[in-house]
Amino acid sequence: MIELDGDIHNRLKYDEARTEQLHQLGFRLIRFHNSDVMHHLDHVLQQIRYASEQSTDR
Image (cartoon, rainbow, N blue to C red):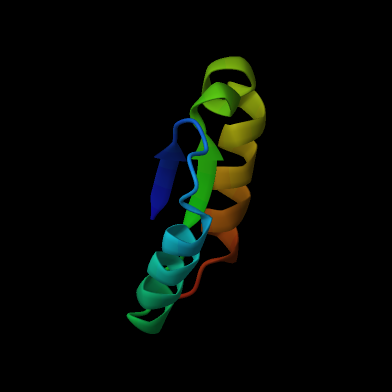
């Protein structure tokens, strides 16, 4: 799963708990800040490509 995050607004504990729940269900999650997508798209796409190459059957 790929998630785009806006501004950080005290959601760290929520994000950590949600990530753990998704991992327990067998999902992998990678997060990017909106600003990274807007200003560093090539790097974001490289990270997505790398993560997809490292994935297992899911």
